[in-house]
Image (cartoon, rainbow, N blue to C red; front, side):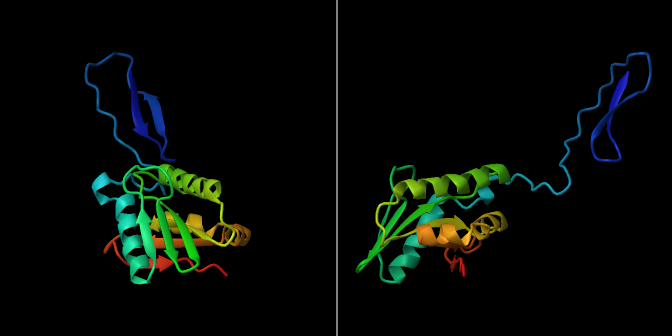
Length: 169
């Protein structure tokens, strides 16, 4: 009979424990690899509409006229105008796991690129302020910021209203 156990390197190891079969089977023990971020429950996540609401309030407070595509409506998530200034933002909420969240970020950038129409406008991302989204935004090369005239707004996860702008030199 084989037994499964966690080996010294954290991997599952099969080992022979007897040649006589037994009816006793231990349930598998869930493992989480070292350094792997836990999957978060959906109740702990900042939704896309919460991000949109916070950014809308922030921009309106700064004198912008703001239009928001709520829910799963197609088009620009947040469109803002103030005099001759134009700002187009793609908003994303948090995902349950890191890989999905990275995909959200990459998808948002792709959507921004597809919307590039006005050379005088600013384009940007509105994201929950968490370490992974910050790392992804900070890793964007300066040329990407320059070509997109990029603005990145982070919404505080706790109070869901404080906005921090990514400063890229």
